Length: 149
Image 1 (cartoon, rainbow, N blue to C red):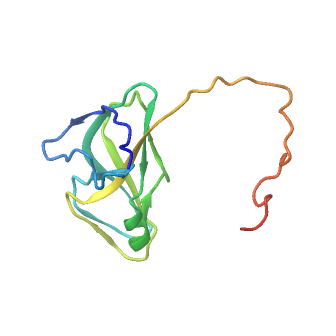
Image 2: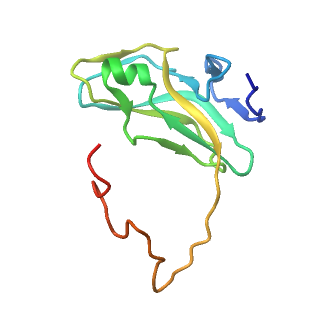
């Protein structure tokens, strides 16, 4: 198995009890963030959960934040904003914006893995206004235009 490319990323603990993210398996793309507070998230409720961490990403990289798939599948716990975007120039605390889309209260314990992050390169586009866009076979076909399943 080829080893993944390594990138140095600086994390700062904003609280002594913060847990620096870790990959759970050698081939994992995502690493876990841990809750610094306990609480109960009721169905239909949103909560902001601190991680006690800030990050310094190298230029050209972004940290994308995702729900943990096990919590989503078993309990309906997702991120309020779908996918979080932590820009390269952001230096504030990384927080999990959790939403309980399930049918039962969800208990969060301090130290629980509550969210995962993936660091990826990005490109900044130069936006150019034009009078017309190039033609394609699909054209303006939108939702469902390529057929069912």
